[in-house]
Image (cartoon, rainbow, N blue to C red; front, side, top):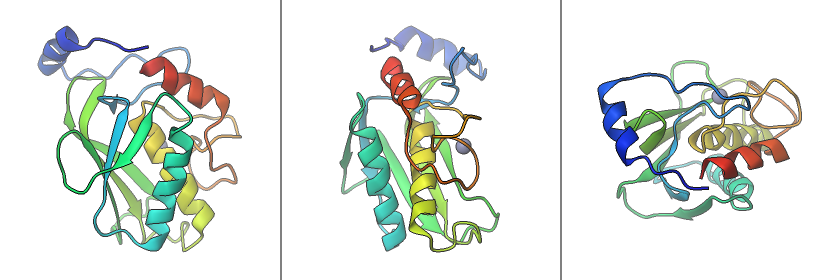
Length: 169
Ligand SMILES: [Zn+2]
């Protein structure tokens, strides 16, 4: 289902209020449209494969993904590099369009993480997780989904994740 956010956009520009957590788990700004335009220019092979993995998780939902060759808003920019902090990855809304949606997202996969190391499945899990945030998913505490925090052996969305994504678009 689509949401019309024009009026809310005006409200959100006045108040930086975190969205109210709902009964499920959508709690992060979701990319402004269900057409995920993904840009990257200098990813390692681990990063490229991880993005492909995440896209393969998103494409069966109401989200469709494409790779774009220049940064034309809206887009999701994926980088991997040796970041100073020991996080696995994160997603930052750089340009919000409202308190609940985002025009330009930055996803960072941390090559310096000694937990990610060079283990592709861990990169895949992390990319699934961060793209899940860009689709509006928050964290899960039950196993069986990439939306749990940290290293895990689950590197895909579960049905609940997919249902939540579909409900948000
Ligand atoms: Zn997270």
